[in-house]
Length: 69
Image 1 (cartoon, helix red, strand yellow):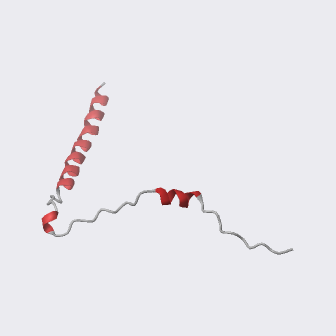
Image 2 (cartoon, rainbow, N blue to C red; image 1 turned 180 degrees about the vertical axis):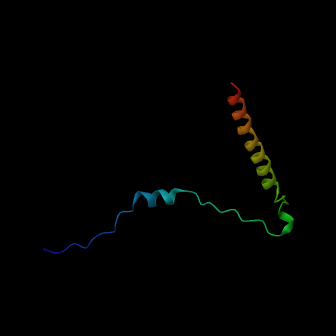
Image 3 (cartoon, rainbow, N blue to C red; image 1 turned 135 degrees about the vertical axis):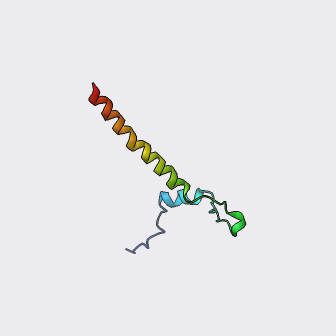
C-alpha cells in the first residue's frame, strides 16, 4: 500500500468571508493648522460646573419641602 500525501487544507469560512468584503481605506487625519477647527477647551468644564451647582441645589430644595409636610 502506498501512503497518500495530504491534500491542501480547506479554507475556513471566516477567510472566505474576508475575501468577499470590499477593501476599506481608513480616513486620514487633517494635515496643517488650516484644516483644524478651533474649540474652546474650557467650555465643557464650565458646563459641567454649572450643572453641578444646579444638581447640588435641587436635593436641598426637595428635602426642605419633604420636611414641611
